[in-house]
Image 1: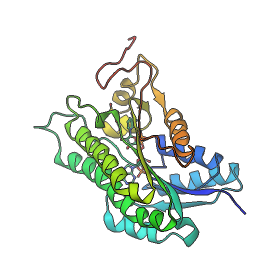
Image 2: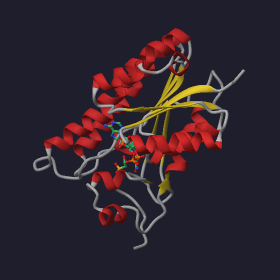
Image 3: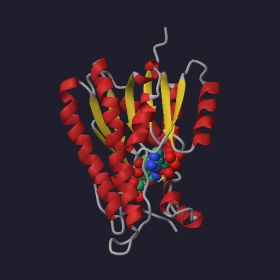
Image 4: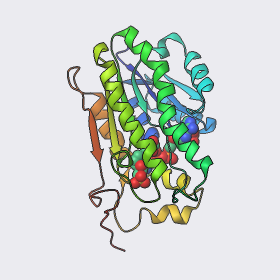
Length: 256
Ligand code: NDP
Ligand code: 8X3
């Protein structure tokens, strides 16, 4: 009988979520991989199964910020895939970098809907299943932007501060069920994050990572794997992970 546990990773089509899904597959987890880009999910599912023949994978294509889509996607899972023990709430992005008075409300809404409401919608679907199973772990991918604020990042920071509060509140509420809740809060990680933030401007995105060595998605994934594989009595509640060159949101040692 398979000893593999079931994990669900949101935002598995790119960056931190993609690296985490691959690493979990190599480390005894079956997977539900989620994202809006269907072709990327299909490619990832194929790659994981070809490298880990024992690993069962189910792909769910939906938008975490749309409540009905979340409900439909999770309820479409077969019974075995519904027994999710590990939930990685990773899907999220920044949209724009602009001062509050002239930034786009559409960008602001997207960040709040995805980075904050998305965690709530998914968690609400999965938590009752964890309670019924009598075990579970939720790891929210926050950000240093959830611990500090930086200029032009007010709403992204607000969404991540909200996610930080949500993590703490969920940990309190789910304590009585023995469900672990924690967050990992990275600094600068070279993924598609800046490309999305700057709306496809590759040069501007690349400039964010110039002059120092940023984290890569695998650095964060390895830490998530560590958090997910502690003994039952251990909960790594809150992690901040920076590249060595970074000391805070605004202090980065660059050789330019
Ligand atoms: P990427 O842009 O590489 O990945 C973002 C992922 O989120 C994609 O898989 C994307 O999938 C998914 N996603 C975004 N919006 C939605 C949505 N509305 N519905 C469903 N899925 C969505 O960035 P990262 O890997 O860097 O970001 C992952 C998380 O890490 C985010 O929460 C981000 O805030 C956080 N983070 C990133 C840092 C960095 O420097 N890179 C630092 C700190 C935190 P798709 O487009 O297919 O839907
Ligand atoms: C992503 C890192 O510094 O761009 O959360 O907010 S930062």
